[in-house]
Structures are given as structure tokens and as C-alpha cells.
Amino acid sequence: MGCCCSSDYDEDWIENIDICEHCNYPIEPDSKRQRPIRNGSEVRDPLVSYESSSPPCSPMQDKLVVALYNYEPKHDGDLGLRKGEKLRVLEENGEWWKAQSLTTGQEGLIPHNFVALVNSLEPEPWFFKNISRKDAERQLLASGNTHGSFLIRESETSKGAARGSPGGLGGPQEGSGVPWVSLSPGSYSLSVRDLDESQGETVKHYKIRNLDSGGFYISPRTPFGSLRELVQHYTRSSDGLCCRLGKPCRTQKPQKPWWQDEWEVPRESLKLVEKLGAGQFGEVWMGFYNGHTKVAVKNLKAGSMSPSAFLAEANLMKKLQHPRLVRLYAVVTKEPIYIITEFMEKGSLVDFLKTSEGVKLSINKLLDMAAQIAEGMAFIEAKNYIHRDLRAANILVSDTLCCKIADFGLARLIEDNEYTAREGAKFPIKWTAPEAINYGTFTIKSDVWSFGILLTEIVTYGRIPYPGMTNPEVIQNLERGYRMPQPEQCPPELYELMRQCWKESPEERPTFDFLRSVLEDFFTATEGQYQQQP
Image (cartoon, rainbow, N blue to C red; front, side, top):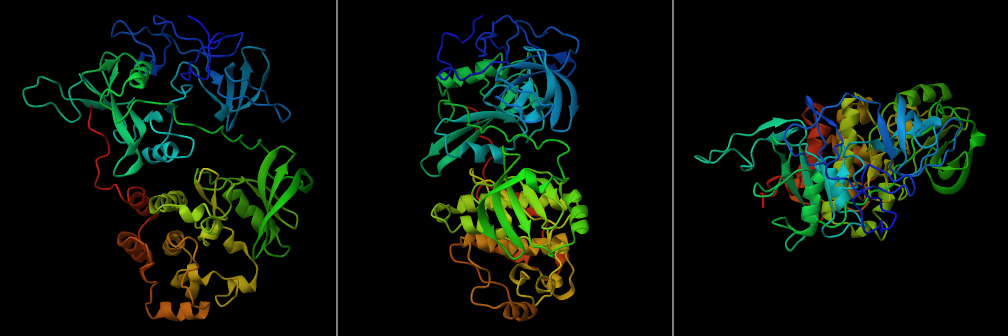
């Protein structure tokens, strides 16, 4: 057993959970050493081969974690981390866990997303926990990854492993003598970035199946005792895969969670650095909270809404947390009201689509952005919430082209006659459903109508809807049953989806969950989910 003190760590990218106390780098595993995790009634390590089918059992011990990243303490009571440092978790409470360093003995709060369980797959750079098939494709196709970049994820298709002897992907062939496989927890999939002559850069998926003896395989002719062995094998040779495995999919250091109990903050804690834009009801700035946390600050004009009503709504909004929703961090409730949120590098979607980078986006990427928005709205739908102002101006874009929904719920709080009256200059007529225009009836189905309009913004790279029409003309035409014609370069199937969103009867419009599922697999709905086994 040896550490990486004398080796080039950058070349040896396969991390391990055991850490050298001198250099803080991973220690190569001893082939006979067994590190248990619980699997059903047994304790089994998916990284380690066992000589028999009965791995040793051990009682549940303290919850130990290992730091995946360095972290410098910034608050009273938090604990600094060094990558590779092991800690004992003393208490789990939200996004900050109380822990004790096994190196220094110090106790304090640590960000939960900076650590991973010891004796698990989580510290492996190629293992991505809780990631969907679609997000795996998004991450692998992002800049920084190349042909052969890969990851292993928990399979979301079977929600369980196919256990038994290696005998094929479906059932046994007649007369083969291979037992029928069943499903049980612990199923994994391998996702690999490939260059396809017909499709260009794409991602291929392979199902990893489990053996009763504790091993794994993609091809039944090549079983492995552990996932580590599987990765090492296909790193050396493609052996039937689309290509040899290269580097693991790149990941960004996660954002530190917002410090607990910092909700209503003093205005003096914020430093506004760069004005990003000005809207109908205020300005948006990039700034820093307490001098170290980069944030976006929306500065609302005095009198635009009631501070007490805003605080009540904000308390609901902060509970809506999802990867596709802009995170609400804190508020300043004395006028002028400040809304502090996570910072999104590329700004609003409507502005980004008009940039030199935005206009080059392929229809595939545009549809992926639409799918991300539909995913966020499906979450809002499931929580029985309403956005009321869904349009590309209220979608923000990260530096990795992730889309997040902003300003959900704020529209109903605005106290401005120019906004609340349907003829008002500020009212977003062109995005609003007829029943909301005529009767003030806002529901999740009126949000679906707005999403259909947003789709036209996306596919036209930020063009204003109903080009050439004034707001009164839009209202008059909608009353006659008019709908926007199919935009240029818009696939007919996408336009049909828009028309479904614009059904006169709200009940006939699709759900956001349906829209998400259609958009995620827009061009691949008829393709097989997994590559055939090599």
C-alpha cells in the first residue's frame, strides 16, 4: 500500500478514499483490504474484489466523510477543510453539518456539498451521484470535456440492478440455461462522450449489471470484481465500447451553501459592484455579501410593492429550492427592498441569445435550454405554485449554459397601475394567457401559455413575440382566435407543441411535466436508451 507522494497526481486521476497523512493525497488500495458499505443485508464495497461471495460484515460505525475540496472558514463557527481530510459528522442540520476533524480534533460547521462519505463511491472523480441521464449528457457535452470523457451514475431507468449470471440485456435466450434477471437496488450506468460521424459530439450510455457474487459487467464475457476494475479495464481498452475511456467528466467546485440564519440582512452587508441592467421596477447589480460571497442584488424601486407583503411571499419563495430555480438567499426588507440571489454569469436568456455566443447555439442546445426551463416549471407545478411572469427576460443563464427560473411569484405583489391594468405599458401582454388578460385569472395553465411564447423567443434567438403588433392589437387578434405563425427554422413538431400551449381552454393545455419529457427527448424519442452490450 502506498501513497502518491512520489508520483504525479495529475496523471493518476483515479482518487481513493484513503488519504496519506503526510501529503493528503490518496493511498492506492491494498487488494486484500476490504472497505464496507451497506448493500441490502450485507456490507459490500463496490470498489473492492472479494475472494468469496460472502464479504465480511461489520456493525454500523460513526459517519465519516472526506473533504473533496478545500474550504476557508468565513463565519463564526464554521470549520476549514483541506482536500482529503477526514471528519466525523456529529450532527446533520440542513446544508451545514457539525463535524470534527480527525486530523486536528477541531469541531465546527462544514458545507455538506464539500464532503463525501468515506467507504463509498462518492469520492471517486468518475462517480456522479443523483444525476439524471439528461444531466449526464449535458455535463459530458460541456466545454472542458473531450472524446472519451465519462462518468458512472446511478441508473434511473431500472431503479435497481439486474442481478444474476451475465446472460444478456433482456431475458435469457431460449435454451441458454441463463436465469432470468430481476431488479434490486444498486444499478449503475456508464455514460461516455463520443464523436459520431452522423450525429457529431454525442453521449453513449451503457448499463452496468451486477453479479450475485458481487461483481459487475457491461459485456457478459468480461466480468469485474469492482467498479474500479471495470473503469481501469475500459481505460486501457475500448473492448467493444464506442471508445476507450479518457478522463472523468469535469466538475466545478460546488457553490458554498448560504450561511444559516442569514435571511433578513442589513443593507451595509452588501457592496454593489457592477450594474447589470435596469428594468421596470428597479435595477440588478452584481455585488458581494460580507465582502466574500458573489451575489446578484435586485434593487426594487420604492413603492413598487408592500414590504410586508413582499416578506411574506419571500418566505414562501425561499422554500422553493430546485436546481432549475434561481436560489433566493436573503432580503433587505426596508425600502428600497433588496432581493439577494445567486449570481448567474451570462445574465438573462433573452439578452444572452442575442450575443455572439448565443446566436451560434444549435437547435439541439436551444431545445435543451427549453427542457431545463420546463423542468423547473414542473417543480413549481408540483408545489402548486404559480410564476405569473414567465418569459426569457426572467430566465437566467450560468457560465455552463444552465438555465434557471427567476422572479417566480413576484408579479402578483407589484403595486403599479401601469403593470396591473391590462392596457398598462408595463403589463407583459404578449406573454400572458387570454384568461389572465381578460379576467385576471392566473394559474399554472396560464404559465403554460407563457411557456409557449417563451419557446418562440428561444427558437428566434430573442425576438419579441408578435413582431410588428402593438399590445392592443395582440389582445384583439387573440380574441379572434389568432395564434403566432410558425417561426422560421422552427421544427414543425416544436410548433405543434407551442400550439398545444396556446389552447383556448386552459384545461386542454399540457402539463409542464409532459413538456419536459417531450423536450428532453425531442430528437431521440425513438432511439434506444442504451447501447447494445459489446
